[in-house]
Every structure is written in C-alpha cells, then in structure tokens.
Image: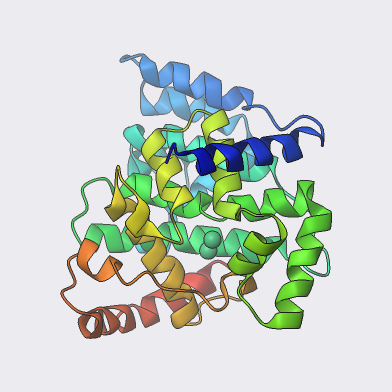
Length: 289
Ligand SMILES: [Fe+2]
Ligand SMILES: [Fe+2]
C-alpha cells in the first residue's frame, strides 16, 4: 500500500483536490459524540440528547436502525432505541460516515442522481451487514459503515473534479467500458483512492479505509480481506440481482478470490447463495423508496 505508485497517486489526488477550496471539516456533533464515548459514564440517553439536536442526523440514524436487514419485528421510533440497536461501539464510525455523506451532498444533474447514490449506499451497507451476520463475521457494525462509504469517491469526483467526471461519463457512453476503467484512463486513479484519502483525513480507523480502498479488488487488502470481500460481494450482488439503478457499477468485474476468502468453496455454491438473497434484497430496496 505504501509503494511509490500509491504515494504518487495520493499526491496527485491531493494536488487536484486542494486547488478547489476547502474540503469539509468534521462536524461538531461527531467530535462531541466521540468525547462522550470516551467517557465510561456516558449512557445511551446522553448520546440520544446530543444526536437529537441534529435533525438530519437523527433521521438518518433512524433509517439505518429501521433497515429490514436488522430484522426487527417493530419500527424503531426513538433515537435512544436506535442507538441500542446499532450498538455503542459502532455509533461513532456510523456518525462519521453519515456526516461525511451529508457533507458531500450534491444536487442532481443529468448525469448524477443523488437519491440513487444514497439508496445504493444504504442498500450495500445494510445488505453487507446482514450477510456478515449470516456468515458469523464478528463485527458486522463496521461492515455497515464501509458499505455506506464505499462509493463516496464518486460524489467527490462529481463535485470537485466535474470536468474529468464528465469526460468519464462520455467515455463510458462512447466505448461501453466500465466506469472504473474510464476513471483510470481519464484521472489515472479511481473513486476508491479518492475516498481513502478523505477517510484518512477524517481519521477513520485504517481497516475501514483499507476496505473502501479495495472494494473493487478485495484480494489486495492486507489487514482485513474479509471485510473488503463482504462489501465487494454485496456491491456485485446489487448488479447481478438487479437491485436499484446505480449505473456506476455497471459491467462490474467480480474478484473471484472472494470465493476462497469468504470460504464458499466454489463459484457454483456462491451463485446459489447470492440467488437466495434476491427476495430480501428487493424488499429491502423497496422499503427505501
Ligand atoms: Fe465502487
Ligand atoms: Fe457500489
């Protein structure tokens, strides 16, 4: 990860993004919640009071807790209950992730549908958490966060590198290649690398940054290939099972090493596994509308 080319890529992205003004800073609510979480005496109701002050954040937290993938029999109506469902050890990363998505919110244009992006992010987060639980991955909360953030680099690209962004869209239309390859041709790097740089700046834990960086090639992850593979698999499943209409993942190239990394044995078995989630994925997606 720290070879010369990786450093060169980072310097290039830094240079291109720095010319465009200040990038968002971490919102007050996140620093406040982080400090509270460091204090053992903090209870769910203390956190609830702080989070409820930020209406946009509170709404998003409720959306997360009410995801059908959590499989709760009744609606989570209060922030306090949502915090209990999500878990105190996960709330900080989740708040950071949601703040980041909020900070980079962009308007719809002819070639960007922000609502589709948000639904795809929420879908991948919730579905990856569900699959992580089903495969007995011990920390499924962090899987949700990585899923939420995995394509954040695309929004940043659309907002701050709009000229290149348009060229990428045109190239895909003209040559029928994947967006990922078009990004490499136009920029020399991809949305995964842009996101990693920003997550580092916001002090996310390094295993989260790594999983976002390698969500299109999880077998390259060194710290936690399982985490990156879970996101990659679900990202791929949204295409294969046709859940949502997020065109940026069209022509998705599957990293077959995932079969071994996640212990499926062979691809045929994995295919059956994926198919068995079709109904759940679709009903979850519909609930986001
Ligand atoms: Fe992606
Ligand atoms: Fe994606």
